[in-house]
Image (cartoon, rainbow, N blue to C red):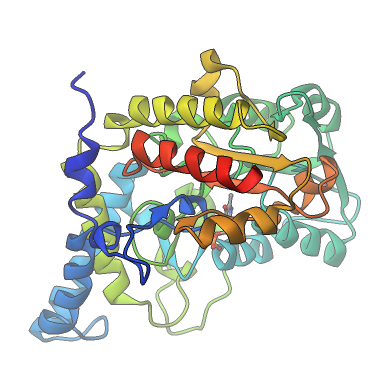
Length: 399
Ligand SMILES: Cc1ncc(COP(=O)(O)O)c(C=O)c1O
């Protein structure tokens, strides 16, 4: 395979070339919180307003162009996720809102003393909606733990949590904190063997690994386009029969077929145009698979840098031979400086990282990190030079 050309990718992202007030180029290591967008995505959003700004279902040209664009975007998203049909692609404001909608509908299938299984690794967007359903319906909640040594999911604790009363298993594909990639196909099999549905949060995997809902075999999968170089929107894929049958919360006159019955109100059409262009961008670089190897090299480099930083402690997989089991999102803490102090000092030198718990509430509790940790999250447009700049800057900061 030809090596990934990060320079050519970078050239397409105007934000990466915009100097700060201090005159330096910022280093975007805040990617797990949201990525930058290529020019073609920006252009597509502007173009929507110029050429097809209209509501859906009209008898005139702009409305028909807008509807055709939405249809085309759904087709592209179906290809991106390897979904059997574009009618299984629901587009909404963000993953959290879509998951709350899904959880409300699924609640109708759940009765007191049914059980649901959640993990200590998930972002709260795939925890809180289910806890609310559990409270409303009197369900039992079982937790899947992590192995602290490498922050992988403890599948023995999943096995132990599954019973004949389990109705739902909700797991994250890749952690937004420790970066671990979970064996979701295996988890889907385990959930189904117990007679439960499996909901996968792919928000942090979609920017880094090719997603194939059919190979995973889950029932629902959610992601967010702003995490993979697109506009702020969320995507829900669901099995067609379930999307057709579950009681979605909708107004009466709106269409009763999937995906429309899950999309309440008028969508942000311009952003859907942007998502279509995001898919075109990814296709133009050869798809996510084109840069997987490059990102693994970046992750290995970052782990090396943090591994030799005096006073730094990394949580998660660090073994260079296991880069395929993680995304390039690395969390760490320092023996003396707080995560916020480090993030503030890096920000003062135009290096953007995250601090706190990034809503990964359970894992930060489990790791006993009340202040959270520093998160350095890489994307395919980051470079080895930027990691070197991080190292030099951190050495100044930690002294
Ligand atoms: C793993 C994970 N799941 C869910 C979410 C929530 O996504 P959204 O902002 O689209 O609601 C995030 C956001 O950071 C995330 O990292």
